[in-house]
Image (cartoon, rainbow, N blue to C red; front, side):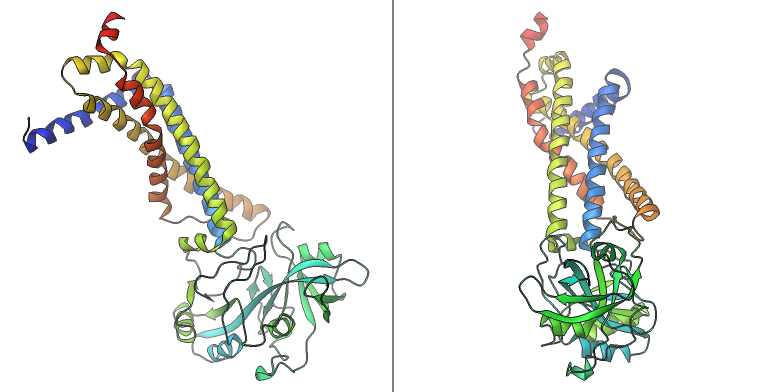
Length: 415
């Protein structure tokens, strides 16, 4: 059996033997243990996919990314501003003039820079509270930016004044329900704006509307203002800086306009998801890593325990295989293949459960606290889940292999 054909025949036979033994245990001898192990792996993988899907939705836009635009333009390697640290990433330049040029193109309904800044708002008879201001250029239509409608803001952005930033300020602000509750403010109230403690106050703004953000108050406090006023307040007027540029209209025309205006920027098309955005958002990335570590730990623990118990019960069978001439490598291969089959089946079931779980989470969230998807599924989740499960099995397999290699023919015959 030293030739190549004999080697392949021998190892093919061992694999078929391992598969047959696994099937017999799964359907006859140790059905409960096998099914429970597969179930734990499947549930762990499903939980991993659901948590990763939530993290992907967070990285793909978060609170300030919920909009109804056809295309969003963001700087390369930029991330969603984290509600935890508020750290700024790279920004786009000359956004006001380029948005104006895009609005004149065929197939484009509207284009607007979007600037996000964390400020403090003080109501007339209350304490200053931290709120996320989102600057936009309204056009008289009801556009959704950061989950809020722009309809209550005056059309255009007169303070921009063709780049001079000396035009009249509108002094308008649209609060989310969360922001209004935090400030104790309502329509018609005047609020004082400042960039933070110890810094001079900016111009006052008047609440023109309290908009339903569709989250039932379960999100960060957000408010809409005209972008040029926020640029002047934050220092982003020098260079016309913004975090992103949103384009409404025909998808193909919007993509073409975005590529022409910012050829080196990232273009996000509505309805698409980019898994690489997980690496650009610190909070989302940390969430995914924690879910990965927990999943690997649970999967490896259960596979090691279940396979160790199975091998311990199969000592007599392993002794018989040794007595008929199956080498140690062959016996260990049978054990390893059995562990691999268990984890693979669990992973496949887990992918199905994870996809169903993401659908269920979005349905529950849509009926209660969120207007859109709070978790996203991507096809890359399928190989990711399988790889995680197999890696867990690889970590777990040394324990049953040690149990198998310590099996002695003489001891088993004596028993």
